[in-house]
Image (tube, rainbow, N blue to C red; front, top):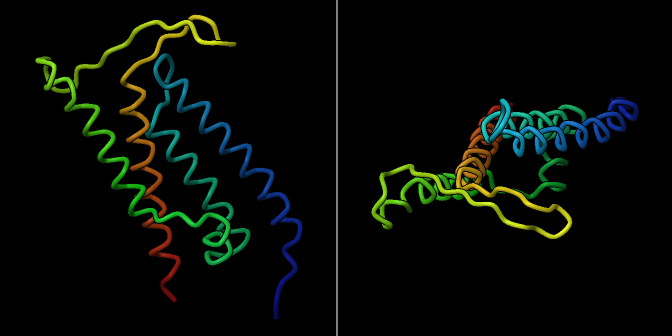
Length: 140
């Protein structure tokens, strides 16, 4: 017998976007306040898990056809490349660079290579967490 989950599915769709956009905010605010790639990645994963609970794993896979193993690999590559790149410039491993740029509509902003590293961490956390959740969810 199929249950009628209209209310929880409708609510999950709305709450998914609230959690996802909050995770992006936490990710972007992580350089000056608590947060960053790790916490943002956990929040994004929790938003996807909410969809899995409201719908099912196969439905979410159709909507978000992401190979989380590749996502993890891309994140590891980005994080390692960001940390190792300064060595080619004669700087120590994990040296980060930043400068101020005048961006259209945003004005004067500082851009950091630490954000590239955080992006890698974000992708690794989402990839690993969702791989674990999918592996557990596939067991019958």
